Picture 1 (cartoon, rainbow, N blue to C red):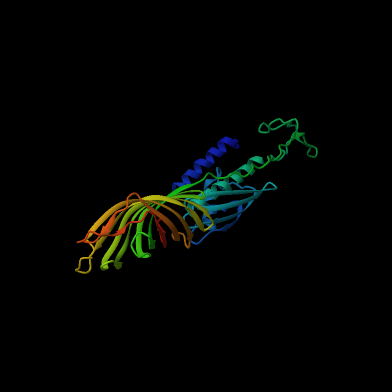
Picture 2 (cartoon, rainbow, N blue to C red):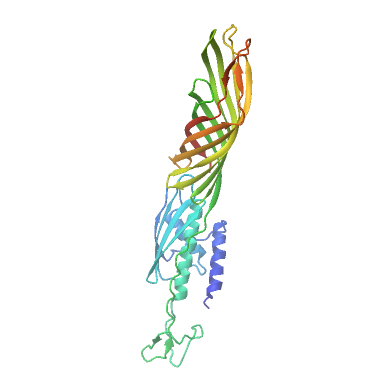
Amino acid sequence: MRLGGAARRASLIASFLAVASGGAARAAQPAPVALSWDAPEGCPTVDMVLGNVERILAEPGRPHAPVGAAAKVIVTAGAPWQATLILEFAGARTERRFQAESCDAAATAAALILALAIEDRAEAEAFEPPPFPGIASLPDLPSDPEAPVVRPPDGPTLAHRPSPTPPPPTEAPIVHSSRPLWTANGLIDWGTLPNSPSGGVEGSIGWRWNAGRWSLRALGGAAFFPTRELSWSATAGYVYGDFWLMNVGARACLGLTAARFEIGPCLGGELAVMHASGSDNNPWEMASETRPWFSLLGSVVASLRVSRTVTVSLRAEAAVPTSRPTFGTSRTDRLVYEVPALAFRSAIGIERSFE
């Protein structure tokens, strides 16, 4: 007895879950599908995919009409695996596109789609007329007054059930993924330290979430601008001093991906600490003091993926202090430097994500 459509699909889904969860394997028979399989190195082979098709079928080993298929699996850094599956059966051509967390998951999903296509075609095939005279109808064939009539030679009149129209391709749901990452950048600051520009280094760690073409990064890290010897001309001579700057901050970045390129805004804040000290024993010597303040950050980040896990990024950023500390001389208490109301930075570096 043939299974009904709903029962057959339920059996297929149960078989698919058994395959996906690593159920007991058995010897695979040649699957009734001609498959062209194009996937990166390290992915399941075409024989493995066809073996999964046979294991998923509700009646494995039973002869089926052949189905033609071509599959292509690709992946780009920071994005889910993309799969395209083209099917040709019942005189129709359909195309399915879907995403997966891994190549193994894409191969298993392709095997399920192929098995469903094979079973759907088997359901659509009409029974051959029986060679026994005197039988007016078959119980498994529904009565359809609009169905065409088939009259076998010297045989009874039978209602012929036509093949159903293949369902239109459906879009797969958006796959969400997340992964940890770290970044390392070189910095140039205009405005925060005296006698700008000043060079520095930055490192951060964080997390990245993907949803289709959109991504969200949350990063926390620190930057350091090494000591520089600076001098200013004053009424009674020169003022000498050394300055260094360190900051600790966090930012969130929203990105829009197009192929390997990604661009988007970032917002955040940082706690900055600047230290000044004198380098010459005279009345105009800089006072040794450390001043902290908090700044709001706004930036734009553009990045280019060079591999699945490595990205080169460029950031342009503005820093707006919420207070403006001052620095002066140690003996005369003369104002020498005040943190500006606006500073600009640029950063270039790499981002490394972990799968």
